[in-house]
Amino acid sequence: MIHLFRIALTALWVRLLVGTFHAGETLGWSKAGDTFFGDMTHPWRAQFNTDFFCLLLLVAAWMVWRAQSRPLGAVFAVLSVMGGCLFTFAYLLIESFRTNGNLAALLLGRHYIEQGASR
Image 1 (cartoon, rainbow, N blue to C red):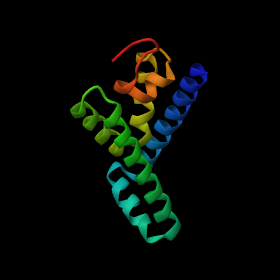
Image 2: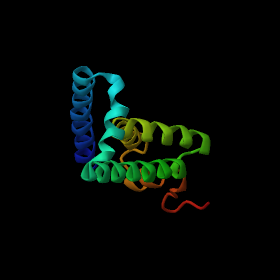
Image 3: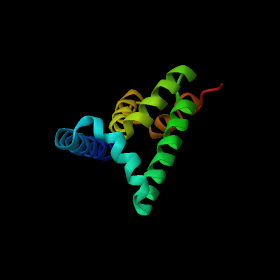
């Protein structure tokens, strides 16, 4: 199962990277913020952007909670909000290897307690 997770993360990350470079090269790198905030005048785009931003904040809070240290978690949280899935997917992929494919350890981070271990 972890192999499928890693393949999906990698495929989605590559697709997102290609789309990001295409948008940046086509419309200009400085237009990202203008587009995001300009879309807020359209009700459905505003709903989508707000929904996505709330998800980014939730992921950022999770990163702070699971990190080995709060300062490192805060750095990851900022990178996640600013980088979206480009950062978050890479983070999850790296962490999946760091935790040796253990999904419980991946999700819980410093809160993970191994079976049979006491705290």
